[in-house]
Image 1: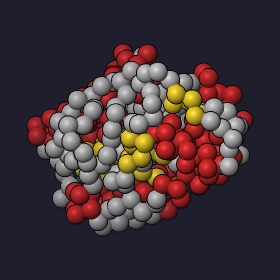
Image 2 (image 1 turned 120 degrees about the vertical axis):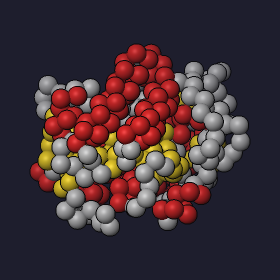
Image 3 (image 1 turned 90 degrees about the vertical axis):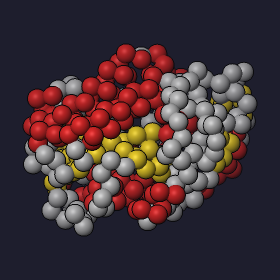
Image 4 (image 1 turned 45 degrees about the horizontal axis):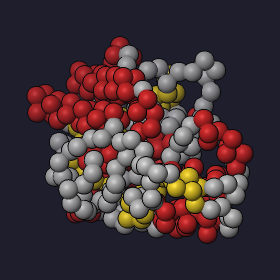
Length: 324
């Protein structure tokens, strides 16, 4: 596979933040994209309205094995992004998170095994590393998940590893560090800070704000996913993706205040949120050497693009108290 032209691709969780960008990107590369969305009573699209007529839309749940057998049939590549992807939500709903994410992954793997798909790409997370033993964090770093979400992602990776060794299933494990950009959920730190800044509200920060994160803009992330789909000889590999640049949360808030010209002040809580990791900084050496990938979008540029998206939606500030 040297290009996506004419390839049949399935994307699970397709109406989500990252997956919707991936749908657009792969369609632009002339792939035949099947987008699997979790059914809602109104058949309402969150992020795919502008492109839905260019995709093959399937509604359903990845926990339905029979459906997974159907939607993976005749697919060249399966991108598995469907998940309960919020750390905070997993703290209050651990059973839902683990059952959803692990069973969904198991169903995708079993369906892909029986349908002989050429490649399965799993959307992993840097959260599985936990508090780092060293930084920057490479793929050999031990896994110490601190939240049910991270534990579910680590468990899913174990399933991928087992299907690779037992059945020779062509799986690829990605671990992205803190993807951000337009359409991101309001329970994530960057949209939260942007909305608070645009409305001149206090920016609420867990702990003292010295936690560090490595942020990757969504356009860079989807290009990484794209390479994982067609680069040869990646089966069984695990690959980190990140900017290799860390920033403290309090400095991120100050930068957003500056870029939005806000009058907001910082407000610190006494403690870190349960399950929160102190420092995340990526070692992307393998992505650079094997894939020729690196993050191209600097944080300021990415934030400006994200701020422009949320400027038109600043009224969403009213949703924050119910989500944080």
